[in-house]
Image 1 (cartoon, protein in one colour):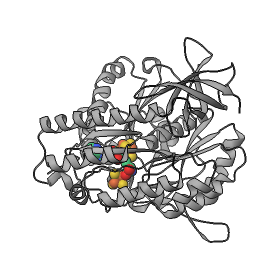
Image 2: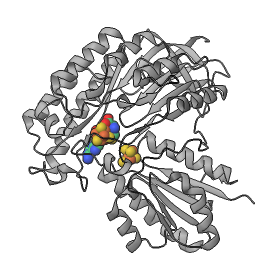
Image 3: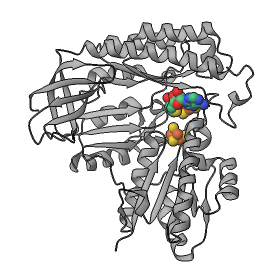
Image 4: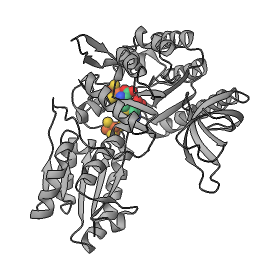
Amino acid sequence: MKQTFHITTFGCQMNEHDSETIAGMLSGLDYTPSASRNDADVIIINTCSVRENADHRFFGTLGQLKRIRKERPDLIVAVCGCMMQQQHVIDKLKSQYPWVDLIFGTHTIHRFPELLQNVRQERVKLVDVMEDSEEIVEGLPVRRNHPNKAYVNIMYGCNNFCTYCIVPYTRGRERSRDTEEILREVKELVKDGVKEITLLGQNVNSYRGTGRQGQRIEFADLITELDRIHGLSRIRFMTSHPKDLSDALILAYRNCPSLCPHIHLPVQSGSTSVLERMNRKYNREDYIALVERLRSVCPDIAITTDIIVGFPGETEEEFQDTLRLVEEIEFDSAFTFLYSIRKGTPAETFEDQVPEEIKHERFNRLVETVNRISAKKNATKVGCVEDVLVEGASKSNDRVYTGRTGGFKLVNFKGPEGSKGTVVSVRITDSNTFSLTGVVECDE
Ligand code: SAH
Ligand code: SF4
Ligand code: F3S
């Protein structure tokens, strides 16, 4: 009987992709995935520490595992990801969850197969966490979650130290992958049927690679190179910091046909004074000017964002600046977050933490505004024909599909059998706040 594994992933695309790598390494060891945690031989939890509720969810999941671990002494429980880069988490695991078999961090993923073998053979408990690393390990196997879409890491770490954010402490300093390695990986993926890639980095705009002739490759140059790959229909990327968004990248929206007309450009706040306290290094006007430039080059570009509500010291007036910015820019959609204190970040010690009830009340007002605008933007798509990469069929009817437009809008639509994995033209017939409805016009 083959051994089986089950992975639970919290957090961002970076973590999702790390889980795909962990699954790839396990497949290399002849493990197969198990649909449920209950009958897996190895259970892995890949954690996120960006907000407090991610911490809570991790410890909640671990609490559920305690009983299963007791009943099945052969079971191996491994925990990894961003939370493991925090000493206070390791201390808590050691004292309150001593039955956890293996702990590894974001810099030691490549050592997982060796660590797992040690735990299995010796039945020892292992902790393998490095504070930071310059090293980029290439060529790790990946078990992709989707046949036609793939994540491609182009850089790791973050140097920005926004005052609220834990990521620079959990993912270390910025380092870029070699350009040739990225191109090689993407060509392989395309050969394997991938139509859409999402380039990943905490701040892809500060990508710095080296070309074959030793020339410097900036992020926009990388997009230009990738755009030339035959058979690759779509390029996306996450995430882009407004302070580093170059004119060359803006022009890539005009010059690179496979670059999707969408940018996720986290603004965090519409108030210049809050942005300053957040150490974002741009102001409200800079952000508005960037959006204008993007729209002048690519009028149809979808703009999505992240917004934090209740940052320390945020006044009602500063919050209203955010509301006004949302109205002015008209984001296609936005992820909205309640500010969450993170241990070890500068904002942890800022005075004037905003009371919970005020945070929630502002959050509700913001969500109402964001949703109203999303619904309005989506309604403008009714009657248009959009290119959609067909991702899946609905469970109840195999001719009803879901997919995303170039602008990253979710579409449910009717189409001919066998459309999955192709890019089709869909006429949009209806819309709501979070999705569009349509019908296929003709095949690619
Ligand atoms: N590197 C990306 C974001 C990574 S974290 C970027 O800079 O754009 C994803 C989002 O989580 C952030 O954009 C921010 O909006 C939110 N976030 C980060 N730390 C937070 C905190 N302490 N409280 C609430 N939201 C936070
Ligand atoms: Fe966090 Fe700021 Fe880095 Fe994004 S840019 S990961 S928000 S420190
Ligand atoms: Fe979370 Fe780490 Fe991503 S903290 S958001 S999983 S980089």
